[in-house]
Amino acid sequence: MGNEQKATEDYTRGILLEPNDFIAYSNRGASYLEVGDYNSAITDFNRAIEIKEDHSHAYYGRGCLLLLQDNAESAKADFQKSVEFDNEGSSAFLEWGLLEVENGNYSKGFPLLSYALKTKSSHQTVNQIAGFFRNQPMMALNWLATMNLETTFTLMKN
Image (cartoon, rainbow, N blue to C red; front, side, top):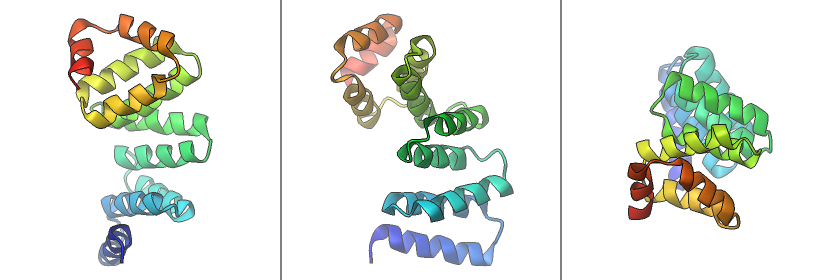
């Protein structure tokens, strides 16, 4: 049995014991997302939001799912909600920033990417940004030009 399947079963048992456990719904939704069960994932993210309207992680998870389903506008709305409820949610800032830049809205996207990098300076964040800009070096230079030196050094260090 895989880790995600076991996690899903554990979250299901928790939900049976506590039907209004929004964290269990959100986490089970993430497990379903991980294994590609998008229908179950969206159901769980929606239920977590029904129980706790300001649960940022459920909005982030649902946004990731919507992005995988090529529903960028709805994904962006969920990333914005995630950020609204958790302004330290740098993963949502990263995804939202990438969507904005992809749609040519650099004045909004570049600061979001910079904030994501500043709040969550990890190899994964840097790799995701680098992968996005890999075939667009001029756009990457434009973004770097908008950043302050501290953020630029953080990017270079990782």
